[in-house]
Image (cartoon, rainbow, N blue to C red; front, top):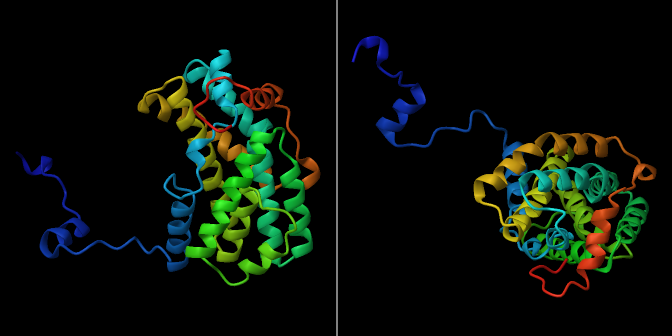
Length: 256
């Protein structure tokens, strides 16, 4: 091997070889590290909110033949993100976060009430309220923060999932933009996970769908950051029908 082809050994690699000590995180601030750690924990599939048991109507859509492969799944989820529950939930998260951050309990209660009413079916109501309740319960037990109890107590209705995430993130001082992107990534990942068991899809094809939706997630997040409550609305009629018809579906793997 000539000198020109010898791989370069960086300082960090040399330190590992000599001392076996971990390399630093490249100057990652303590606050950034804490925020990232919490987001990765709260929105991980391992966080016990039961997201794995819901499909948001995808189970009926697969049975009806609307979703049959990666292309039809990506198209369906793209619309759900931009024109359906993805955008609505993202906007509710943003508004709840800002109300909690400002200590505006009146506004937060109004947002929580609107978000709880803004679901098209009984099963979607179960899905979002059950996950919201579980998220709040675990957060209070293991990830409590100053002021969190007061914010929750100010709401006269159970917090749906996106509102719960927004409130907890705000009270922990986790940046809104990061919270929103992580939430949408987790939402899409859960949809794809459900579809992978229903179609079924392999792991690589599931990742291809996630790649296709990267731009849609970013676009939905940006819209939600600038949206008012009056901008919330959906036009995903087929997805809403799928959620309604799932209630009477004969055989089911999922609760929604």
